[in-house]
Length: 181
Image (spheres, helix red, strand yellow):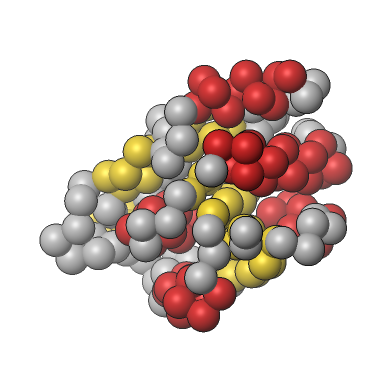
């Protein structure tokens, strides 16, 4: 079994991106790490990596500097709509990620079951119904659109939540996937 875990490089005024750091903390040999630029165009590299690696499961990690705990995304949307430019200076306004694709995808798993599994292991996670429409939503949508089971998490800044605990959540999500498939 192979899990692709996607993080992002630093962005905007943030000197580091906790998603990149968390990916570096993961030690499970079944995990394939991928760090992407915060770029609409470069986010499409995900599709090539999926084709090459053929993962069984995908986890995307995204920065949410206003959150105080990690949140699993219930949905991802077929829309790019920037309130700020990406690293290439691109702004997208109302454009589809996949032309003619479904308007949205639900999380690939029953979220209450994931929360129960994590809770049994001393961990918790919030639930979010709106991942925004920035590059992280694009990556999550592309992962879901591949047909591979996908979970997307928004994680807080390192000062607001321990990265080691985020890594534990990721490792437990991999264990959850293994236990349910």
